[in-house]
Each structure stands twice: as structure tokens, then as C-alpha cells.
Amino acid sequence: MPFYHKLGKIPHKRHTQFRKPDGSLYYEQLFGTIGFDGMSTNMYHEHRPTQVKDIKKQYSVAPKIAKANNIQSYRLHGFKIPQINDYLESRKTVLTNSDCSIILAAPKQSTKEYFYKNTDADELIFVHRGSGKLRTHLGNLDFKYGDYLLVPRGIIYKIDFDTEDNRLFIVESRRPIYTPKRYRNWFGQLLEHSPFCERDLRQPQELETHNETGDFLMKVKKQGDIFDMVYATHPFDVVGYDGYNYPYAFSIHDFEPITGRVHQPPPVHQTFETDAFVVCSFVPRLYDYHPEAIPAPYNHSNIDSDEVLYYVDGDFMSRNDIDAGHISLHPAGIPHGPHPGATERSIGKIKTDELAVMVDTFKPLQVTEDALKIADEDYFKSWLE
Ligand SMILES: [Fe+2]
Image 1 (cartoon, rainbow, N blue to C red):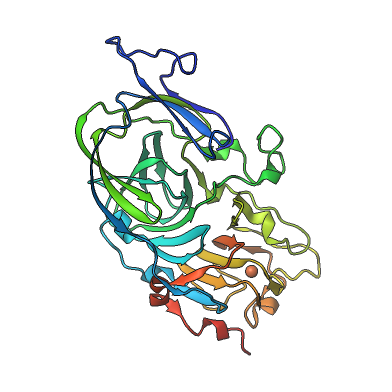
Image 2 (cartoon, rainbow, N blue to C red; image 1 turned 90 degrees about the vertical axis):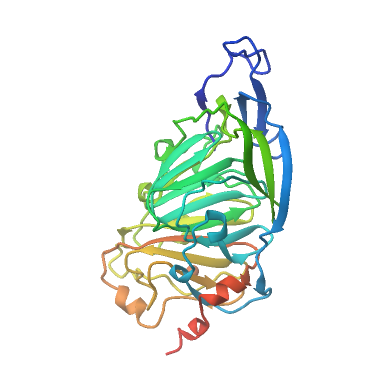
């Protein structure tokens, strides 16, 4: 997160004595990325955060690749993935490469038995259905339909759902996820032409501090494996912190679209960036207003990036037979464009109510076995007249 946040109790000076009411010391921890060069947070624990009691088991959650090299366009029926009680078991990776994984999840239950920490990747969790509370060691965030939850790597979390009907679209990123650099000034402040500003980014305001000792199961993801680690102290024992590295939320409904007289390219929808992919939000907006404008996109060749669109809500003007929960994969190397009739249909339309999330990756994506279970194998022929 590119701006400073402070929550709970912290001492006036870093790396100095900070004492509990009984006179003993709180335990300081610097929590940073990219060595000591990236964003960091300085936090204070009730207990030493290093007290591992046991490492019970280790198992792989690496996706099973069905097509390592792919040039076929696909449509995936995202709502066909199974609803599963457990949050981690419900996460199904459908597309992946060495930079990121695209995951669909339909968890029915809150995480009760364990805490979770992903040390491989930042997680961007888009909430398509459901509401609840993301609970972390750096504070809690309420979420609902349309929220992006950005969970930097290493954040310990639990997720509480209000009901059993939850649908999540998750991007795991091995590179840090930031807001686009071109929307920030040299201090990191979001500029006037940015489609969102700091007020739209929700920081944790509620800090849970537990002092208990005992057995606390933490599932730690590292190198594609989950390690079941037992800690001797409650992982949410932080009394305060400050810094730049913490989870935050942003609602897609707070993204202010940029429009023009003629068709605007996808970068105007950009919401997040990494070195390896971008995330764009397509939101309800007025269409292009040149008198001869064609609102549907032109055919385009993303020669060196795979394009993944996750359809959330509304009517998808450029596509025939696309519904909420669908994913389209348009791979690098071949052109794609509007379906037959869509260009003509778009002329004269003044607005769209479409809502979609796009992920463009700079390396090709591999298609997993879980993807093929929900794939439409004939989609690549859908442009034939
Ligand atoms: Fe496209």
C-alpha cells in the first residue's frame, strides 16, 4: 500500500523499549518485502512471534497442468466449480504461470480451525458473491460484493463469511501488487487523473489483539506446499503497528471510468499492476460519443500477453452467450475481437452496465485440469460466421 497507516499502540521511537503495563517488553517485528527495499510495517506483539511448537504435515497444493502450452481460446463456466466447506480446499487454480495463478473459489464456511499465511504470493481476492470479514494480524476488513481485498504476502489471516453462498475470483501474484505508477506522483500520492483516490482505499481500522497461549494451527503456503505449523501463541497478538505493508480493500464500484469520444483502450480501466500482469476493472460507463463511434472494441492482437476476463454482472456487449461467472481466455499470439453481430449491435448505444475484471499476463498461462472440467471446448470456434 503506497501510503502510511498506523493502528493501535506503538512507541514514539522505532527499536526502543516499549513496555507492557507489567513492565515487561512487547516484541517488535519488522515485516517487509524485497529485502529491506520494499514496503514494510513495524509491529509489536504480546508474545515472541517465533514460537513454533510443531510442524505436523506438508502437502502439495500445486495446480495440475493439463495444457502447458496453449493457443486455444477458452470459456470457463466459473460458477460450475464445486461449493466446498473449507476455504483452502475450495480454491481451484484454473490458469497459472510462473508469475501468477488465477483461482476460483466457492467456500461455504468460515476458516475456524486454522490461520492461513501465503508466503509465495500476494493475494488479490475479488468478491463476486458473499460478504463477511477478513481478519488479519494487522487488522480486520469488512467485505461485500464488488470488493477487491489485497492481502500482501505473509499476512496471517482468517476469513469469516456471513452465509454459505460465496464466490471468489482470486489472483495470486509472486510479484508485489501495486496501484498503477502513472497515477501516482513522486511521493506516491494518487493524482487527479487517477480513476480512484486514497479515500477509496479502505485500510484496517479494527485490530484484534489476543493474548492466549496454547496450540494454534497455522497453514503456511510456501513453494506450492502447505505446511501445518503449530504455534504456541495466538497469531493475532499485535497491539499496534505502523508502516506501508498491510491489507486493504477497494470496491470496484468506486472505480471512476475514463471515457472518450472514440473507443478507449484497456489501460484506462487499469486498477492494479505488477511487473508480470495488470488487473483492469470494466465498470458501468457512458459509451464513446463521437457521432460515428463504434463502442464495441476493435479486433486486437495481444501478441505477447494472455487476456483473462472474468464476467461479474451486466450485459457483455462484445460477447454472445457470456454470463456472470464466466471466464474467457484469449491467449497471446492470435487476434480476438467482438463476436459476430456485436460490432453492429453496439452502434448508437449510449451506455453499458457491464462489470468485469480483466487480468492480462505477460507470460502465457497454462490451463489446469480443474479448468478443463468447466471449459467450453468449442468456444474458440465462436467467431465463425
Ligand atoms: Fe481483448
